[in-house]
Image (cartoon, rainbow, N blue to C red; front, side, top):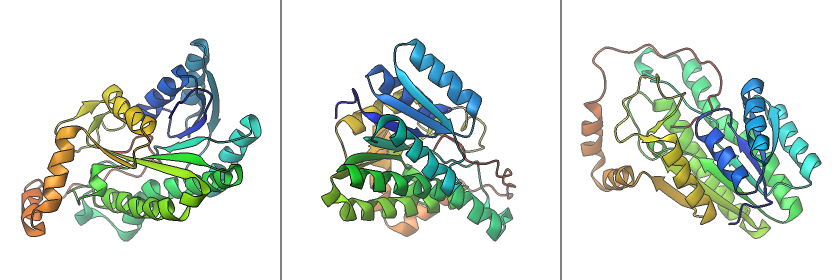
Length: 270
């Protein structure tokens, strides 16, 4: 895929991988549209991109609000006439010990990682159907492929998103819509710095975006990174489930950890 001249909407672009991705795509000539909740961060990003000779439209919105998300997609199409790609990067969660959580808290964290995908995905898909094609990119997580202690609601939401998008691949294929899902391991960002989770084999945000750019350019369907974590996950899925669970159980703390209060939708997916 050649990004030059493409209209690309990045959801969750005020920090972390979304921010770096926006700058990288703009440097390659894309017409970048960025959205997140923090207006000041988005405006600073747009100013930086435009000062470097790029083009950027910044629209603040809450990704958990279905109407607000649809309005962002409408605004992008009204401004540029089309939407060539949407990149879904909203979500995230701190360490979540389900031994201390209520049903409402579990549901809230799942919504903040699943609804934020659905709310933007379907307005974008409907627009792409009307225009005859497009490309959907999504930051999922290796945690969506394997239950991880202290990340139960997050893992469940990411797994649900995998199945939803896999079904979209089949139902929207004839409309000319392509899908790329990336599965990062641990990435060092502002959001994940103090989330209470161990981060083995952590990579920088810039390195993570290198992988994302590669996956999007090559239009890969699924792309797991970094390579070391990719093979660990693949091995774990081949081993007996009982063995994998016993290994992972060793990382569960003896004393339950109270989850941090839900502060809204982060712009970084683990």
